[in-house]
Length: 446
Image (tube, rainbow, N blue to C red; front, side, top):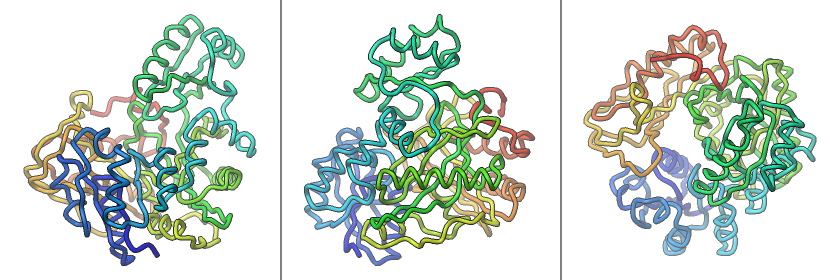
């Protein structure tokens, strides 16, 4: 097994990886920006190296500094976590060139699946259902208009290098296409340095369902069920659960088989997710593939009793995965993302100092976080500060347990999304499983 792993990330995911490394007897190296000097991942790693100033481009996205840190500490592998460099093919290639194992797929697979237009063509070739749309990046406004008319409105414009809703526009009518096109390309260029846009048929009121997969270096692939990530705000997930209250067993098998087929087609290695949009008639379409561990991997762990971080490391080291395929779990798990945001004022970010913190507990309650009393939440990074996860025998039981855990959780000093989540656990439509990705646009929670 690897002797020492550098974690090229911060916050709760860095701490999560360190814990598994310690359980496996692997030494750890934390990297940190100047503003993260007092973060818990720095305190709990065996070694820690400052790699730059607070802006991500100077630290957590600084490839030369991270490679230098790995070489100085003699790390033989790097775990990228999620975000930052986790899906950067250039970083994966440099790791390979320096003979440092990146815990994840090859740079070629990251590049293929990271470009959404290429990923769509690749999955279509594998026999995975795709949403009708352009065959690739649109070369001109006129070409875009022609394709949109052909697949019929509404359509959605998406940045090929996109994520988090950037470079994305929904167009309901032909007269609005030109303005939406210009806005999407400008935003894509500003956010990703790539103005490439592709077009898809807009699936109205869909569910966002993702399939967790594991694939080893020997061609074995299996899935670990689905996660329903439909409760979103501006394309950012807020609540995830497994199993989905919308998916029946036959559809679960069909989607799982497609995910396995897609992963096998590209020769995938590691943990990843294949994400689908599912319409109200339970037709499903490939949306994208995430070639990394997901924020919400925790709920899959809770119902399958598998440590997905450990699985990543074993796969990266060359071990074979267990071939037993997923069978529906008797448990239900829910995750609420706790963000340092003010839900009463358009969810604006609220960085600052944690004055008081109390973690909820009890059977079936899990909290993944890097905060503590006195910790100062920096304004430079994502506002997520904790993930609260519960599991129970039934979905209703999990909802009740989540509400109790949220009410027990105390964070003072900054505004958080805890009040929003408490109200969601009381929402009749949510309790009934009656929601889509547009739920928050159509329902007032607070």
